[in-house]
Length: 301
Image 1 (cartoon, helix red, strand yellow):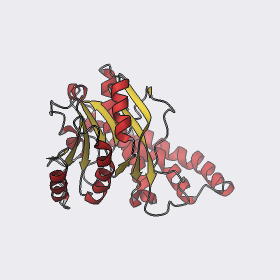
Image 2 (cartoon, rainbow, N blue to C red):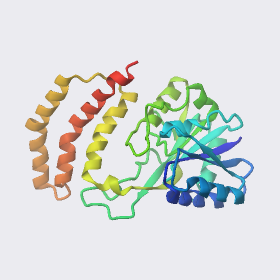
Image 3 (cartoon, rainbow, N blue to C red):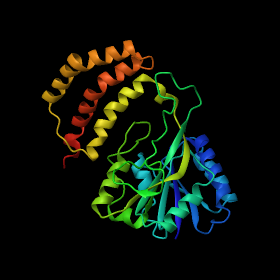
Image 4 (tube, one colour):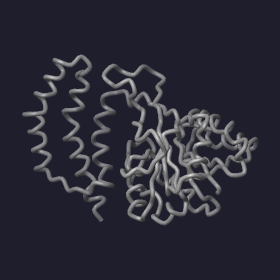
């Protein structure tokens, strides 16, 4: 079976270099089976020049360009490549473990999944603030063994799917997912939901792992507030719920009257609960509802 490791990238050539450097040593015995496809989402940072140079040395590397900005557009670029059986999406800021390709092939060969995913361990170039958990940026372990999962919790950053099945459901919904520098989510949740509705078996391999960069912006308070809103907005993909202004107003009042005193008590009593945690927890319910409401009219059709 032909496997394409697809790395979608947008102006992150230095991170892309690290990702590819981690993959190339693993290809020695599977080069006829696996190719690496770089989907350039209209970068202007030397990505094309870098891939052109490295592709001359490694025939397993191929370059595609998707001019429409958006991660889902980039991920859909390879769906029409009929010679590919499996698409293994890998984030450009991920550094796959040395056994990544081994685990990829093993899962495909030994299990009857329609798609499957793995996990990632966050790393940062700067110190994690004390108000964040030390493992911030890492994905929780869904299982200690390779197994089928029943919830839409696979990360699109280390995600493998049968190309034909992805094609059947129309690929990734381009209303969701990162768009240039814009924070956006839920494209992988939406795909998993539609695959399940189409009878798919979705698996998880805890040994399919990568290190994943925790960008400096994610260590700032404002990012977490934007995240609360964006999760609500993009969770409309799987939670098509109408939110009225009245409900948002009630949530605000409830937060002020009931939630804030609880959070204030935690701030006083708990050593590992900081003012940043209080602000995030206080605004999270309301920002989520505002985000959910913002996409109702856009997606209800």
